[in-house]
Image (cartoon, rainbow, N blue to C red; front, side, top):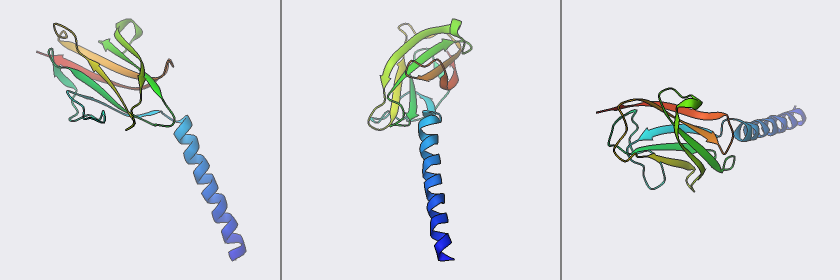
Amino acid sequence: MKKFLIPILLVILIWTGLNSAYNYFFGPKIIEITLTKSVDDKGKANEATNTFTSKDKIYLSAKGKKFAIKEATVVWYKGEILTKNRFKVEENIEINNSGYFTAELSIPGGLEEGEYGVAIFNGNNDIIEQKIEFKVKN
């Protein structure tokens, strides 16, 4: 019985390890996205919110799989998340040592009241990894 148990357990361990590695490298590269008014020194959101005033600085904090992604592109939208609604694109944002990407939206004179969105892409890829919508109120 022990002769069969050890090879079976070994196959299960190898299968589990390969499956985990596959999901890590070929699954979503951005695993968490948060909007906030401030981030800590690691780039993590201090307090998540989806409602801002026109004068607030808006930070995007995104947790990435550190060994699977190195750079991201962040795109800000006025209204729905559609190509025609893009108003700010930030390319080549590097993942920090803590595994976070951070982007900031601050417009001189403030943002107009309304609905907005932000999306994060893996490098220059055209497929959205994560997206989130938010409101600006006065």
